[in-house]
Length: 212
Image 1 (cartoon, rainbow, N blue to C red):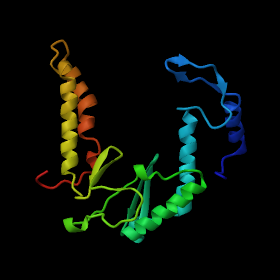
Image 2 (cartoon, rainbow, N blue to C red):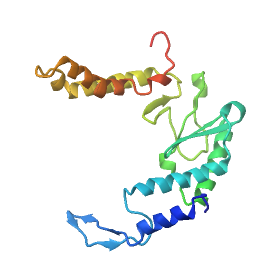
Image 3 (tube, rainbow, N blue to C red):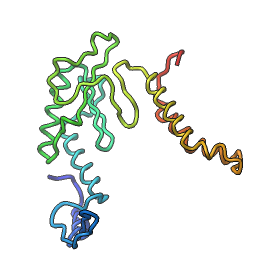
């Protein structure tokens, strides 16, 4: 599999990993060191890099460079979170099958247990996902990159969810905000650091109605 990485970089990585040893903890006891003959150590920074390179290779072979505005499907990805958008279920199913084949070629497996699909429509009667043959779970909402996405295409529930998360954070740290030994400026800094980012996460993408 060719990624266009210079041979010098490949040799440097190989030199870093050759002879690497690891230990495991079993029942609270550390095992004797053993040589890592294949793959990389668990939680090794290189592991995520190799995975992203492999995933990028599979996605690149799909040739999904244009936007949904001028084609039937589009793929958006951030790290290992892949979002597939399609104008119809047949187009979605065809792209998912193609993606599964390309992933299999590079040694990745598309897990049906972690795959979710949803149908958007202005009409509630057309949001049903019954009859779809796509591997995965049909849902009415799911969390993507920390944001709740629902088939109602409304941010009302996400705003409520963010407000509740902010309230939980406040009551968790209420001892700090009521502490008389902390200056007002310190409490404002705590608010801007601990609470406001949680409440306003993703707010720049919200399309709110007047009542919201």
